[in-house]
Each structure stands twice: as structure tokens, then as C-alpha cells.
Image (tube, chains in turn brown, cyan):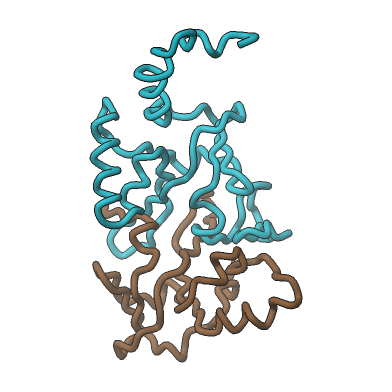
Length: 111
Length: 146
């Protein structure tokens, strides 16, 4: 059974179906199955990981003065659901859709 | 209720400490691991995903102990780290794998449902044997009142 580590996926470049760069993998989203296990749901892709370094890449709400700055830092962030992954290569992850079709919100993942 | 750190346990059927949806980087990687007795046994140094052909990858193991850090360090430092830990470890099976069904909660710390695997303390064991015990009085430093 093929295996991969999360650390080998984090930072990997992501391109859309036309080969245009979307960004790099900033995080991996998993969801819990009915049997209790976790399966891959998708990738959080972006160009700047700075907001995430401060801990504001997920659900933690930043202080009000930082809202605008962090939103600007995360303006390129996109959520690539597993269904839209065409190929996971050694160097690049290729999406099967255009980057414009990717939603910015990873929390749009259905639960 | 948000975990506030990359997980969301608002989903139906999730356990109290197991979010329905979570980000591995925020909610799992680098978290402290506590065994069933609350003893700190290391950190989640990596996460293994595996899959069958045509299926989604699933979270198959948490990788821990300092040996798992090697692949996360790039260049010469990472190679040196892997070599060093490979020599220190008697069994040679890098790194320690913890199945996800042994996890009780992920945040704020990864708490296990059973005692930690014995291989998670290879560096501490080596230091105790080769360094601490050679210090005069170090052989019983854990005794009461020391």
C-alpha cells in the first residue's frame, strides 16, 4: 500500500489544469469517517504562510487590528478538495480545475 | 465548539476530543503526546498517510520520536540527524508509528488510550546509560528525595 508523509506534501507546489501556479501546500485537511478513521479531504494552498506561522491560518480569530493585515496576507489562499486533485507528483500537485474555480475557504468542506 | 487550533468538532458523531474536520499542520503536527497515564513521551513529528489504488489517502499513523524529524530537516542537517539516530537506535526500525485508533484526543495535546511504545525514548535511554549514570550519584538520581 503506498504511503506518504505529511511533511513531504507540505510545501509542495500546486498548479492548476493549465499549469498555472496556484501556490504551495500549506496544510492538509482531513475529515473523520463514520468508522472513526480520518481520510484526506483536501489541501490548503497559498503563497504566503506568514499568517499561519502566527497561528491564524485556521479557526483562531485574530485581534481586530490584525484582521485586515491577515486577510491581505491570506488573499491567495485556496482550498483544493481531493476530488479536484488530478495527480500528486514528486515535485508538483496538479489540479484538475482552473485556479479561479477554487474556493478560498477550506471550511467550506462539507461535514 | 471550535477547538480554536485548526479543528472543528461540530460534526455529528465525533468524540469529545476528536474533531470532525481538522488541519494536520495545526491540530496534529508538533503536538505533545501524552500516554494514558499523562506521561509526556514526545511530539508528533510527522503523519503517515496511506491509500489503496483509486481511494482517498487515510491517516494511517502518527510518527514520533526524534528520528522522524530527519525527513523534515532539509539538506545536510537532516541527513546527519537521520544517520545519528539510526546508529543510536538498536532496532533500526525508524520511526515509531502510533495507529490513529490509539488516539483519544488531538488538541491541545495528543492523548493516547494506552502506554507509549517503548521505542519513543531511545535518546533519553542512551543519555541515561552513557552519560547520566556515569556521573557520580547519577545512578540513583530518580530516587525519592534526590
